[in-house]
Length: 209
Image (cartoon, rainbow, N blue to C red; front, side, top):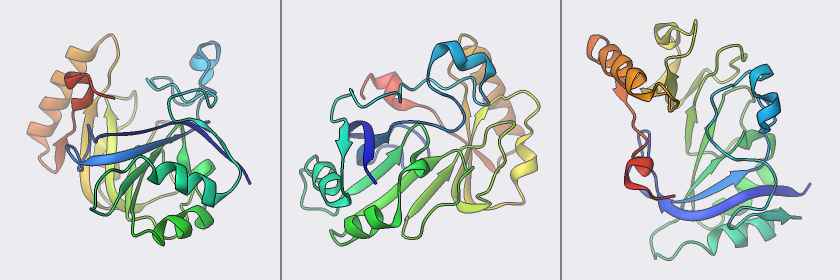
């Protein structure tokens, strides 16, 4: 199996429970909830995605034929003596992330996190699982580290997820043309329901990748 990567880069994690942490971001191409093409957005299960995950033409992107080749590529971005922290994202990373790649990376003492829509059961060996549910998509991951909802989504009630086994519950205001309204709604919800943490996309505020 070859791995198709949209982009790979070293950055500061800008959202969620690991916000502020230095990480290698590896973005897989492809998603099972939207093609990534604007002509298909209105018919997609996830209509509000703000990420380009189509193709392999991004910085640090490409097609990698083996887990060894991809592992070497990813680790080349780490410039510290500390153990690498890698965040796999997409699109939907679990369409491609497999036990062979995880096992190979683990032999290099890395810490692995994923950001997933929760519709695919993950392989073993992932250290941090962040699930972002989407309305209309069947959630197959009911246990993990962080459940992060982009808010508000029509007919999606955050309280319906509180019986799932996650350590952290986060709400992130939807970044669209109604962002200020969405932010206010998110703040109001978190104030009234303090189990939920506010997650802001600080990398956008700071204008870093």
